[in-house]
Length: 151
Image (cartoon, rainbow, N blue to C red; front, side, top):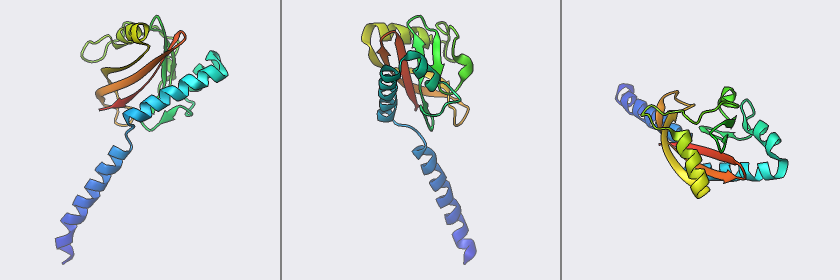
């Protein structure tokens, strides 16, 4: 009798793991809330303190696969919640695996719209695989603050 239930138990365990992996993913409303939290933090504490707080290894602006990145209006990375080595680098010409200059596009969208969603591909910090990503961004003074979800 035990042997009859083994396949069922394995299937249930796999489904449970898949559900927990999906639950680990941030949502679009959470990405927007993260950016709004970052904008408010920067307004309250000032740009230098905020950029330091947004950058790894600080985890106060990291939630699962969700984190904050900040750029100036020339494409220089000012803060990165997953990779502190990016902070201070001019990334305007950075391309995703499909050749899309997503930082250049991000700067242009920030200047023209102020608030927007942007599609590109990026390495998922949970799986370490390149995946489609959608980032919500807001221009706050001379800083572009973004946080995104993997699709």
